[in-house]
Length: 237
Image (cartoon, rainbow, N blue to C red; front, side, top):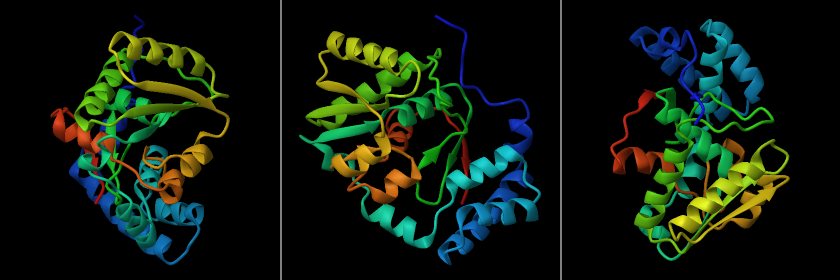
């Protein structure tokens, strides 16, 4: 086992733990919602709001992830399913999105709840995925959800171009075999497009996928409540 985690960065406590900073982020998020709802471009809105409130780079990253327009929020909420809707269905998982978010949560990194009710973190793949100490536990949490949902099949979709995607596929396939789970793992060159076009029910917190998918389930929100997970949560609204 390696010693890697997806812990918070040095300085994150200063940016996200004080009430003063959280209040500033909440007001900034209101401004973002206003601008995006009036069709201002995301980058221009982020630059304007970030400069106005003198936000640091990681605060801006959190703000961007938590932001959405009124139309986006309504659209996403209208497609959100409950756990009871998943029985006997096939569920698609945005593999790296789900896995890294859970790894971050379990590593006590800051997790941000956005205006759409989705949870996001500040980690990323950046071309290479590296397994961390919390990877096994993250997969186990997905297994708990799978069993409780009574869904028929669960399909993990990973980015084929990302280095080590084959290794994480092998790890999940082995875990599924050992635990008699009806899981599949597929590698796709364009997983976002694949999920939006092919998944009747999918799990992701990626904004573009949420806007373009058919239906989605808030897996991380469910696990936080159902498994009573300890979370370093920043509620942005």
